[in-house]
Image (tube, rainbow, N blue to C red; front, top):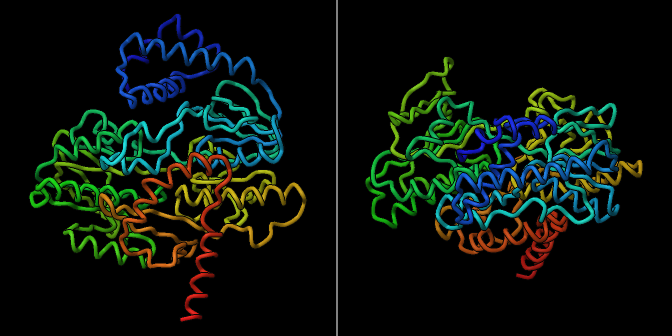
Length: 490
């Protein structure tokens, strides 16, 4: 976190405003940090005076919101303004009109997170992955820049951190998944103050990855994967392939020992793609260490401690590092975990095919916050938003969801394996390949890299967030028809 806010906000004068609004220091810091990160990404230098201006801008925003939004009633309440929440809000606003949908989201910045791997690998800039939250929320939809403090599903109501109550007929949960740096001893301190400790999972740290990668000349380079679930399960190894390519291109790869440490027992959950990735690792001398979970980092002595999940006693051993990319553990938002909406693990408890809550018929879930056993990716959300929309319409009409509209667990993971190569893994609930194109997608291809680098980003901003992209299902059907026709006529 950039320094300079806490002293300002804890002052007797400025603190009065936040006590009046019911906001905690931490909530306010979150808002200011979002604005600060956007400034830094665009090359602006923050001085103490500019930090004060950020605070005043934040105060103005909260004041305006507070005046307009108290005890409102909406037909649809969407909690979370990320990918799933924004796409769903757009679809509902288009169908049911202005004034029917409210989105509750505290962040001022919306990030295209699939770009974080490319940013960490030096192939893209942070500013290319961000837009203001206000700019992506659909017109006709109300945005409440606040966070939810409590859900009251029996009363069809929720309470925000600022004390507002929002009553709804239907609730869509899209709260995402939270990064739990605190579950690895010393990780937060290492990311803030340590050298050569990085992660691509946060806009706060993602730019450090490429900086440390460039400075790495020799020694041990570690890449970690925690106990699941996590979002974008391919990302921990994507950055390994990009780092390998960078170090090879700069003539230092022979001096660097690359190690991949994963809490899983396999490299990738879908065998077809795991086999292809293992071959790549063998060819490039990338060592794999399975069922090893990172539990501690000593950044002063550059020691990473792993827990052996294959042993009964979960033995621990230390591994020295000169560079380490950490994928932090993840989990549900605390407010969800503490609510009646959660399953025993803290995730929104929905039917995996209809995305409707198993106990509350007017509540639905989408994306990383739910307990659906699919890969947590933006591609999965694209497919889910179509199911959720159809499921919600069916509920309103009092009819069951048609089988053709049920979610099959589709997810896609564009596995970047080099500066211009990519394996496009697509699969379903059963971890069976569900490939779109009429060729073997387990093969590294430039065309698939081009798709990720140049097509998927505008597709995200211009189609998915507007509720107009539901995944490649229809494209897959067309290619399958073409493939069958070609085989019949050969």
